[in-house]
Amino acid sequence: MEVFLGVDIGGTNVKFGAVREDGVLLAKEKIKTSELHDKGSFVVNFFNALEKKLAEFPYIQKVGIGVPGTLTKDRRFTLEYPNLPKLSYIPLHDRLSEAFPHVTFCLENDANAAAIGELVFSRQTLPDNFVLITLGTGVGAGAIINRRIYLGGDGNALEIGHILASNGKTIEQNIGKKGIVEMMLNELKKDEIKTSLNKNSSYKDIEKALHEKDKLAIKLYREVGKYVGEAIIALARILDIKNFLIGGGVADNWEYVFPSIIESCHQHLSPYYLKDLKIIRATLGNDAGMMGAAALVKHLNV
Image (cartoon, rainbow, N blue to C red; front, side, top):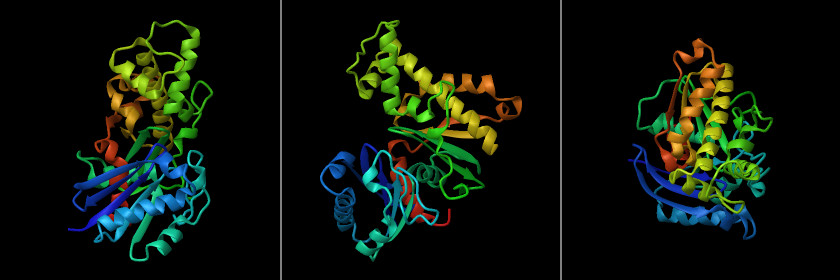
């Protein structure tokens, strides 16, 4: 049975996963992105890490890579990577093929890869049309339409983090991890809610406070749900899709986020959309990026 290497380049970690063609994750490893980014050339350091991983699995001949930004339509050149600028505007596919001539590579936006991963390896039965929204360091989305990834006119559709929300900020400014910390700081200035959080609290501190039922943390995640709902409203009306999967680390706090997602949708969507609207959690969890990247090379024509 064939084994693929799925690589998820994220703003926080770079994850490597050896994935069997039936969806079994055989091995995984993660390296902090900062370790590759801060010590000279990110690309050189990444290639060195990839070489080591391929040496562990010499029989792997296909590698899928999910990248945190835009790509040319032919998926050979990287374009804009605001959270990882050293990866911007390089012929990444050609450089990979030159460095590892025995390997077939496939590059895709990380959210698109995660959507393909759910299509191919999901632990639940999915419809032919759905949108996956990923909530993590940033915010991304991928649309599956008639069981194929939707890329848009020039290959970079569904950059939903740049949709304007009702407060005048972009969706990502509101609900990416940095946005949640910024929201906390603004709430602390109001001094209206008793909380264990303070101006030095990190995103991890907010999550910890949430699980301790901190009132401010709960309010923050309700706001996150509101803005996720606004993104869903836009996508439902533009793409005419009613099935949505929510994944990524922020989505781990589903019970706090989901109610306000639904509330937003019911406030602004008509019965046509609400009748068949389904919003559920994605199933691949923190492995979605690796599994999705592996799915790219399992089904090169997906």
